[in-house]
Length: 98
Image (tube, rainbow, N blue to C red):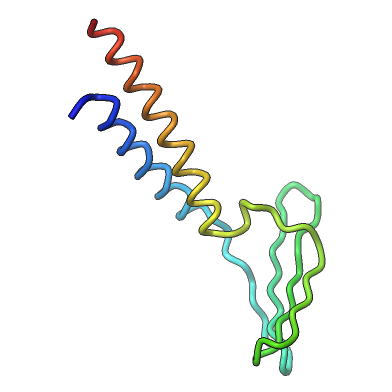
């Protein structure tokens, strides 16, 4: 296996782990028959509030969610960034060998 492929896989794994570990955990509060989920933003732009009934029939969302607020999407984005960085470093290392 060449250096580019190895560093690409390492970057993919490290990026995925960093994305998963640093994802914000939403606050969920049960109010009567509703579950309120509050996702805040650290940069002062607000956040989102989602109210869902316990039987799943009512779903109300206020605010614009960020793709980085969803743990799975954040992990995917960070994994792709890690893979690109790993591939770039592997390309640079292979080029210096030649």
